[in-house]
Length: 385
Image (cartoon, rainbow, N blue to C red; front, side, top):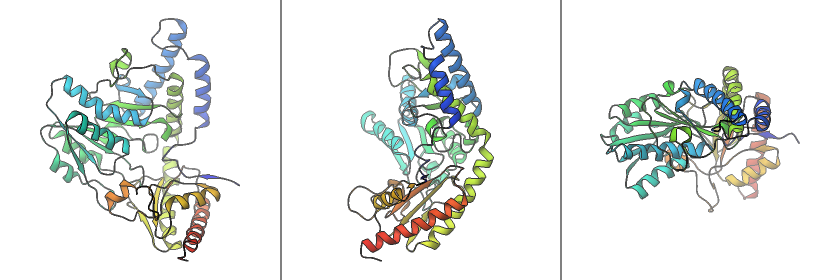
């Protein structure tokens, strides 16, 4: 059976070029890059070149790039590290804002500021397409707001947020804008200026780099302090030895991704629109989530009544398709997707399809047929067919 992987929003397959870079770096740049001996200098040279490559791609200075263990750590460093830096500077900014559809790492980091550090937290709602209204953010930011934390593209439905307008609302009161760009760095060609971001977090695993490498980029107004103490690395913004081999492979993956940005975007957008058109036509009582425009080209999310989402994932897996479900759907176990709940849309039978540029129209049509057959079979099994 030829398997079709449709869970790129969780992790891309490792690009061949990144795999080779990872192997090469592991043999020649394994030493501590802070050491002055030949081995250390080789590691430092590779680390510096990789950092320069990534910083250039994101429109930043390489000195303002902080390497982390993944997207989750980058998010926590942005949320908690910016608060720690402000407190050290004596700033009396004790208010943060996020949207209701953020990744759980953002929501939990913001909640930690509220419960453990006494910050005020405003969680802004979204419309039925999952979009944040800049006016709603402007209405809650205030003179003591430290930061607003928002995704560029939602990880479950693909909605793109108006980050530049949100930046304007932030900057009017002197607040920072942190953009979680894990789903768009390496896929939409984003930069700090394009997004209006003061802090930008990303993950190498989301564009074909190795697991365990993330990054946080600071704009001119961005300030963070390390969450752990122990050494002077990365300008005291993050303690611990960098994964030089992983970072080198991440830089290569980003270079390859940027080289194919336009063709990859176009091919995925054609497939996304085809799926949005044909899935509702093939299956009754189905809802496609998110906007037609202003959306990530590689994410389609649907919900179907009278089926269990996890059962649907299992049946599609047996049919050769790797998909993700964000809710418990028709069963009473588990919890529905907080993103869909915030949008006020159907949560039952939720499945997210997230695909790379190799997923073509013929494969999309074949998936629609398999999906429709699977939904009908599950409904019959539940006595609803």
